[in-house]
Image (cartoon, rainbow, N blue to C red; front, side):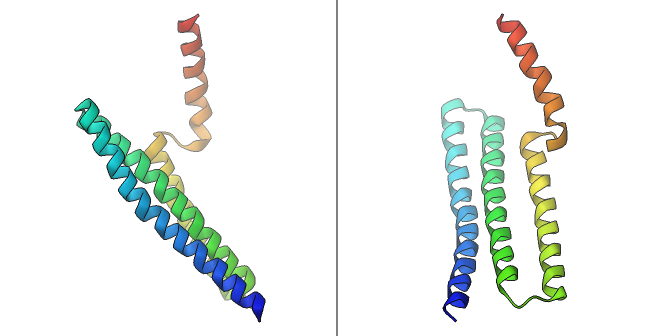
Length: 128
């Protein structure tokens, strides 16, 4: 019985941390964007800062919520319905995470090496 309480507390903690990371990340992202705008007077740069930092906070929150769902499913009585629900939740959150990452980086993760590798080489050649 004590194990059940521990895992329930762990699940609730992951859920709370996931939501808190998104809420605090939202506040932090707006603060960063305001500072960037104040220092540079560049609205586009401030907006990019806001999008990138807010996207990072959302990604962290989604990861923590997925962890909560995994703990909840693994520690509950096993059923095919619970496994299917977990799979669907993880799939939806993975698609959300990937789309946010593409928004932040501007390129899908599997193509990032194609864009960053040549950029690094060009930068090194220019600095030589």
